Length: 137
View 1: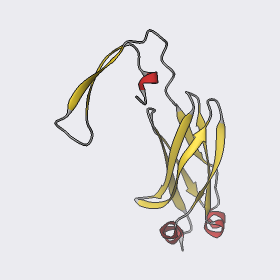
View 2: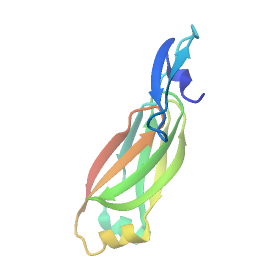
View 3: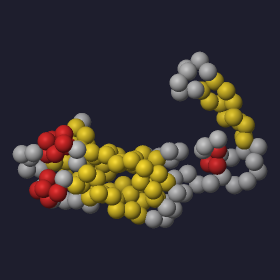
View 4: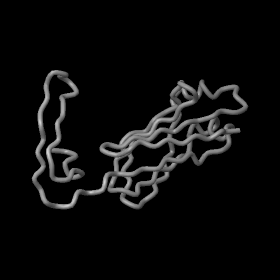
């Protein structure tokens, strides 16, 4: 079962995310030490709005200080999605540069702006999400 490597020995109640009335109990009996959960940090490296608009790419980075992580990133201006990238592999203790390609609607959302506050959200299975913001000028 995926994710049990992060659990200590014990009993864990759960419910099915597809069938609300379906519940169960997971019992972990291993006496081993749990693996640390992934701990990610995301950052926006781009600072110039004109460069992002011209290249169609937002430069970002993601780091992991827990255990190997597979990260999904999404960039937003307000509620408008600029673009996303999925399945970024980050080894424990590593930092990976990620060039996030803007979608057509993302390019449109930045068109004509002199500044834009961009929010980058990173999510990882079994770990805590992270976010970063930057004002591009």
